Image (cartoon, rainbow, N blue to C red):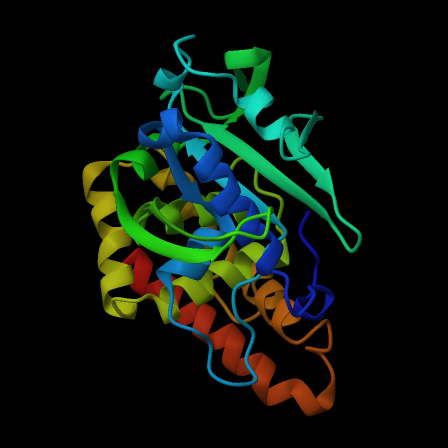
Amino acid sequence: MKHDTFDKYPADSLELPTQALLTTWDCLPDYRHDLVLVGGLAVRYLTKPPAEGLPGPVTLDVDFGVSIAADSGAYPGIRENLSGHGFKWIKGRFTRQFPTLELHIDLLTDDDKSDTGTVVMDDSLHVSIIPGINRALACHRTMKITGKTLLGNSQTEELRVAEVGPMLVLKLNAFGGPSGRKAPKDAHDILYLAMNYLGGTAAAVAGFQEERRIGHRGITGALKCLEAQFSSPDAQGSVACAAFRLNNQHEEPQNEEASLRIRQQCVTLAQALLG
C-alpha cells in the first residue's frame, strides 16, 4: 500500500516495518544469503536523515528480493516461520493486521527473462517477478541495523541492503516502467534516494551510470521513465513528487515556489542520470 501524500503516513510509520524487518531476518536464518532488502526501508538505510521539517523516507511494507536459488526444498518453510509471528499469506504477500495499520512483507524475485508474472517457490508461494532483483542481490552492502523486534526484544542484525544503483533502477521502473504504477511515493523515493544518499548525490548518479554500463536488464525501462516522466517541471513524475511532498497542496499559491523547486530538482536529477 502506498499513500498518495506524505502526511498520510503516521509519524512512526518506519517503526513497525523495522520491527518486522528485524523479526523476519531473525526467523529466516537459512535464507539470509538469498535475501536482500529493497523498497522503502532500503531507501531509509541508504540515506542521510532529512533536514528538519522536510519529508523523509516512509513505508508500510518490508520488501525483500529473494534468489530463485532459494527454492531448493532444503530450507524450513518461509510460510511456517512467518506465520509464527502472525503473518498470513494473502493475495501474494504476507500480511499482519495491527491496531493502526496493515503491515505487509513482500517477496520479489527475478528469473532473468520475464518482465512480469510469478515464480512458485517453497510452500507453493507465488513470488512476483521484478526485473533487476538479481542485480540487487549481487550489488548490495551489509549494514548493521538495531531496533526492536515484533516481540519487543532489542536486537542488532547485519542485513544485506541493495545498493543505490540497483535501487534507482528498481524505483524508476516501479514508477514508470512497463508495469509502473505512477505512485507519487515512488517519485519521492527516487529524488530522496539520490539527493540524500550516504555517499552523496554524485556517487548515486555514478551508481546508476554503472548499472547502465553493465547493461542492467531493467535499465531500458528506467531510462524511458526518466525521459518521459521527469524531463520537465510539468512532467508527470516531477509533479507527482511535488504533490506527494506538499500533500496535494502543490498548486496552492503559497506553495508555488516550493513546488517549482521540487519539480526542478527532479528535472536536474533526470538530466544527470541520463548523462
